[in-house]
Amino acid sequence: MQKYLGAVSAAALALTAAAPAMAQDDGLKIGMTFQEMNNPYFVSMQEALMEAADDLGAEVVVTDAGHDVAKQISDVEDMLQQDIDILLLNPTDSAGIEAAVRMAKDAGVIVVAVDANANGPVDTFVGSKNRDAGYQSCKYLAEELGGEGEVAILDGIPVVPILQRVEGCEAAFAEYEGIELVTTQNGRQDRSVALGVVENMIQSNPNLAGIFSVNDGGAMGALAAIQGSGRDIKLTSVDGAPEAVAAIAQGTPFIETTAQFPRDQVRVGLAMALAQKWGARVVPTEVPIDVRVVDASNAEDFSW
Image 1: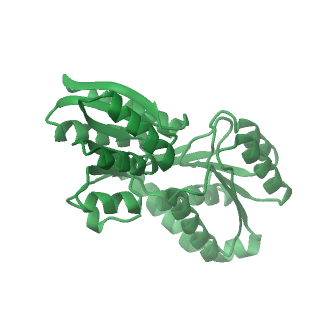
Image 2 (image 1 turned 90 degrees about the vertical axis):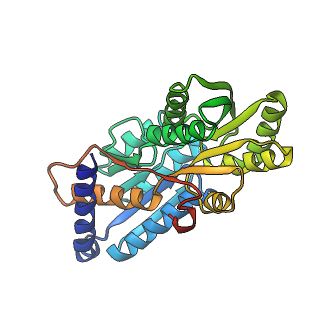
């Protein structure tokens, strides 16, 4: 798989290098709709998209769904009215967005789902290995606890990547007879919501030793709750956000995050769309992007 992904990445770089004149001749227009833009992860992804579009000489239309699938469908309709050539789709609801995917395909637009897949005739999905991410974080947590103790999962919005992270986490915990998953509660991937949820979680579970958060936003709220409690509770997460990485480097109870690479995802996604637009007969339907454990040993050197 690593060799395959390397080949895909090399192809993406080659396509991007050859692209500027072709894009300018075509008047290429790219639309990207995000599930949210108040998350550094997606801000980083947008920055990489704008950099790539600038190199291509392409026009970009970006929208923020604010986790509202009806708004996201409306945003896609507006983009189609503006005659986009490529739709990069970061769905807020994998099933609910299917109507928009079909509208785009009916209009002859290339559709690439990024970070989270979408139902319907998507041409390519580029996303992190989310199950692996959840598995690695929870295995790390279980090992740090010596294979024993009560743990909890701070869940999030039920989109496919989050569900996969929880699935991977549960699989990791199940490998340790001494690890007991005592509760799973929803922090909605939001710092302020997670703070209150984890405060209650800690009060209700006096022997809680570890928490896994499905994202770093929720984890930062969980960290505040842990520090406020004065309890020795270890915390792991998924994302690799700068604030989370800094907390890990400082030796807080936040001990690990399994990092994703949002810039790589959107670059490869755009490359797959360009390959199809320029006549490639075989384009991957799915491109998985590896994840990486970030802990105190490498946090100072890591960034998106």
